[in-house]
Amino acid sequence: MIPLQEILVIAAALLALAAIIRSAQKKRRDFKNRDATRKLELVLQPRETMKVICPQKKGRVILTSKRVLFETRDGFHAILLKNIKKVQGSNEKGNRTTVPANMVSLTIKAEQDYEIRNSCPEFEEFAKQLIKKTAPKKSDKPSFGERIKKFFRDYGSELKKITWSSKKDVKSNTIVVIASIVVVGLIIFALDMGFSALISALGKIY
Image (cartoon, rainbow, N blue to C red; front, side, top):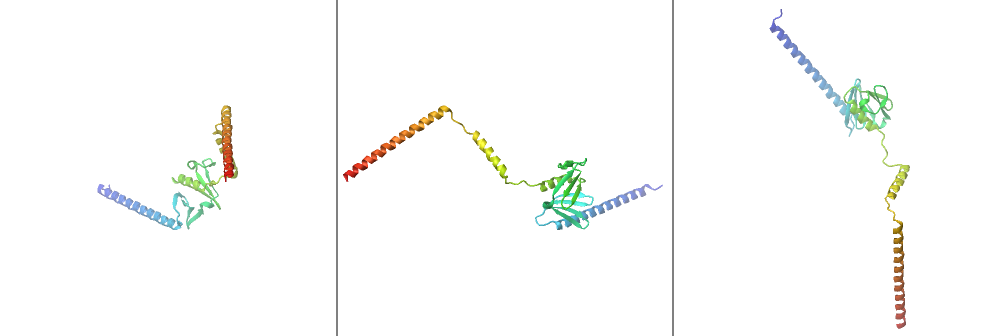
């Protein structure tokens, strides 16, 4: 039988070896991540920022403020967001869906089709931001037909706000207006006659 002391020594040696292997793997992984980050930073253009990184089997897919970057063995293949024709999601049944949470894959249609699988926690955020960035923008200026419709709609709403006078009010207001016109006319007539007589009298004197 193996003495207990030797068993303890072997166990301690195995634990130490496992710790060394784990530490070496962690350092290697950290170095690989730092190297990948350095490569990615070299690829980014001025004023371009990373948004979401979505790891895939063949490499990472990175969404930036301007492009989608596909990691390859030789570096990165870039697609400008403005060159993306369509973004199409598929659910488990193979039907199209626009809800990122229901997607099992996402297809980017540009000069060719690129498929991204829902294989990482970042996929949902990646799909959400990509759909938002590539959605067709609505024109701020309304069309001629929409402006005509808006004009008549506003005209109708303003017309409803008008308070029409009753028949009695119209009659009384009409009498007041006619009476005012007559009174003002008589005053102007009297003044005119008075000034005419005054001018005539002054003419005779001088």
